[in-house]
Image 1 (spheres, helix red, strand yellow):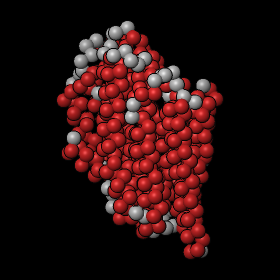
Image 2 (tube, helix red, strand yellow):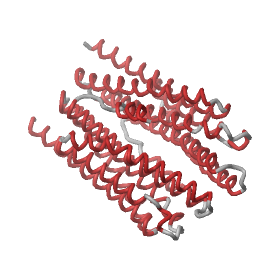
Image 3 (cartoon, rainbow over the protein chains, first blue to last red):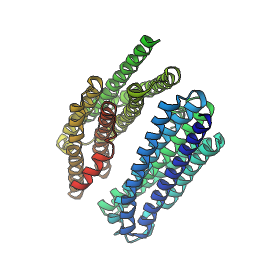
Image 4 (cartoon, rainbow over the protein chains, first blue to last red):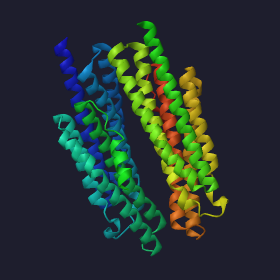
Length: 225
Length: 225
């Protein structure tokens, strides 16, 4: 029985890693479609979200089975609850990949790549945060998780900067209203991916240190504003 | 022991009702601040989010204690897992109230109330959906929960209409870029409140009928698009 429980926990971890890798790919491909103006690639990303939704339900059911059949306590219980929340966060990251992909048709008309501003940089920071958060979860490395919490301000600032630059582009008539709105939308969606990576990092710290850091970072941020 | 468990489940339910009522108030007050241009009321809504975050952590801890100490199975387990997810959804609705409140300073300069278009109507539909979802949870009424699922399309359509109308206002120079962006932002945040009410309704159905309707509604919607 004990060994079977260990195997099931390991399998839950593997499913989350798989799910993490699928949503990371989807965000990456959505932004690649955006930067290269490939509407067909964007459609593939939108279609791939079905896989993410199916994985979410699969992991959710595994969590409920584990809780019902194994009745875990202490550290195992915390691990399972963290896994369930990370599962939900990953599914939401998948939704943001879809949102970004949905902006590709409009933004494929943008012509000048320079008008996309900091999108590639925001994408690489957000995906690095996601990777660090998931690696932190796999290796139980709170150092990595704390690194993620520290980067959230960077991406918030980039999002603010992007929005202001797009407003300036709109004022100067360098951007159509539709493209401007979609650029702001993509920037916000990348910022949300980073927020969710931050949530995951908080779950990792909760699991490893058994204390809730959630909202503490927010409080800290408010004081810094 | 059994009686204590019943009491703890009842107390979890009461906490969720309290949390639901706080976030409902916050959305309502944020939109009231918007419609009346009261920046100070908007600031109160932003400050009130601390209470929501504290309640979320309190309920999350109660869930973990219940799982660890009572090791529930079957229907009780499903109830507790549903409660945990509803808790998370409610906290996110609280965040959307903050987002709306943050748009009040810019939109208080809008002058002509008519330019706010369908905001009051979207707010009342979204809050009705939230109320029905929570009532469905309290009374285990899947009829109410299914009513919520049916209304999500209405608010999606209103959001699309709002966005197109604001783009038209921007083209005609009837709206400043800042006000236009914030109007679209408020509309989107109300649409997200409705999405989260839909999530809650899905949890109610999951709990009462022990089957996952999640994503099924999405699939259905895609086919209808």
